[in-house]
Image (cartoon, rainbow, N blue to C red; front, side):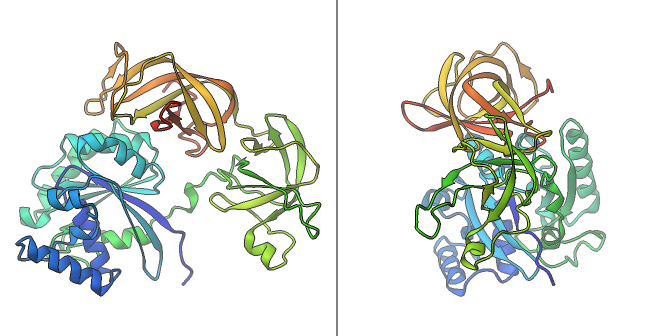
Length: 427
């Protein structure tokens, strides 16, 4: 069987809803952990006085997390099945770690929001669902956990589904799937539950293996941010000149007509190389797609450098110095205040930018827009206007998550202080 595309997914939800336990159960029941790892978890569980194996310890790697029984940082785990490989981001649930959750969920294909069947949709459920919507995550699973503690009651599951559906009508969510599970027992995680014969959908693992993500890539708008100019300066490759990077969108082929920004000069693609193709002596590969590290050779000797953008002549990104964006503030030492200058990192381009205006601060519990706000503090989200010292080549975040996102860096501390999602419309 042909292996499907790798899937990056995140688990989010309120504190103690069972995120780490779900991932631990998924790894355990899919036979994706080593025997010595399981023995270590068994020993730690016994030391803590548990009469059961606490599978959450497989992901709660920090000592502080194990002592408190919560997730603080984003824990990444990797595993695979015969059908697909996975990268898991186990995100924290505490409100004070919202920035960690945003970091973990910003690049995933699918997010899993856990809901405790006893409590239903709570404040953190709404908070994280709104963040998933803002981050443009294409697929969402609502895992109603701890069904064993409500007697596997179908009516309770349907009630929670209705609660979330009513709330989600206000959000931009595209693909939502509801699955009743018990991560502690293992119901509907890897194996189908005999306790919920009323549920006819997929198990959690089966859904992860089968969800289709290939169509999520934007293959229409060709965007190739140049990361590095390749000039080997060797006798064998003395005339070689290529431009290395990773396509942010679109499919690139030899012979395609392209334009280089900001110069606006046009040319065609002479060839596309990868490390493997050069090692094998292959003159050029047939196509480069998003996520593939390649080197592009152009037919003409143009002045192209890091931070430039290669695109189609009649399908170009917005070239602008004035931006509007939703940002999540991540600095615990200082608040965002207008008229402050930061270093802005957008794709491979680095410029200086000033936050000229704070339009509003968003209450991510009620979605109320506080237009009287004058600053943003740690973990707060707001809409801002920025002015950059040089043009940047952007798309709306909802159209392209790569060219529609950026980070702000404090110039004195060199710390990342905010992550932004560009909005080219008034919505």
